[in-house]
Image 1 (cartoon, rainbow, N blue to C red):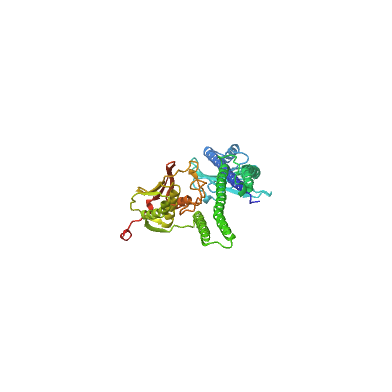
Image 2 (image 1 turned 90 degrees about the vertical axis):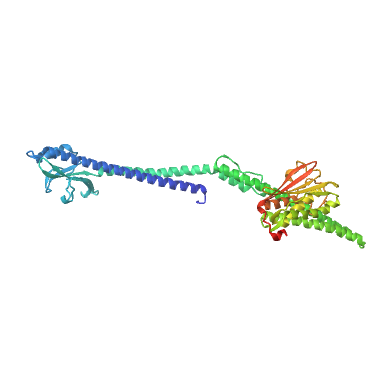
Length: 483
């Protein structure tokens, strides 16, 4: 039962409400009790002051006892008991309360000189209920008689207790009733408020890898539940894209791996059909199988590199080297294929570029870019390479003079297994695999060094790729390195 959010919300709501009602009721009760007792003490004090004024007026006359008693009978209500004592504590006059209750005098030596004291007494009248009374006593100095009197006034607490009992009964009935009513309302409101969560939960339970295109319903996109559903829908969209990319990756990888395997299998099968072949035929078959095996190995290595990059398990092997020397080395390696196609490599004079990074990955990135440039450049054309040092980092530019990349393909060229020219044969390869992984790996290498790789331009005059590597990776050359 407590596993339900609706139940927990209702219980928390009831707990807080019950605490607030109890605190509020207790506060009201205490304030009212304090006010009633203060009012009772004020009535007793007024009675004492009235008795003092009476004594000032009548003391000194003959038969003052009867006069004082008569005055007391006229001044006070039947519920109040009043008594006047002389300075020795002897009763001078009194007016008993209804029922014959008399006002009592506390010990004379405990009374202050000119202040009233208040106290409560309890008397047993033989019934089940005790008679509680509030008392006030004060010493009164009468100047006309040059003597002191003690005035005692007593009043029952029953009216005050009855009012407080009525208030307690109201609270004992109203608070539980309010809590029960609020519990029913809170349960209903929690059910209505969490209804979208139930709907989202049912919809989410039906979503799997086969139907990731489904989305959770959004009742109100501006409230918390609506924003939660919107965030979850964004997550589903990202998962759907990731699953689609994964499926496409598996399909493309299967296609790329199937082709060389098919060529190897077919070559071996055709070669073995005849019992005897001459050496040239065997060499030709083995050469073809070796080329496809190399291509297959390159595809697997690139896939493994990307997989480790995605998993974050491919740490950079940091070392200090010169970027210009690394770029010159890769240009010489790519120049082998360029010479076969009679392509001119236009290389500007490089400035010294000390750098700290993964030399092997950067070499692979430059080989992929140069291999793509040579592969897409027609025979007899040229490829330009430039290295510039600007504020913020190094900029490596690789430009070819090929036919360019169609505009609809340009946003996808860094995607894995994507090739803009689907009709290109797999024989046109350099150090890359020809499987559409070269640019994806090159982009990852640049970003792993806090840099960027972008297609700056691509039109009928050719394409230009620009690599940016930040100066934060530059090391300070030493005398030993410069040698």
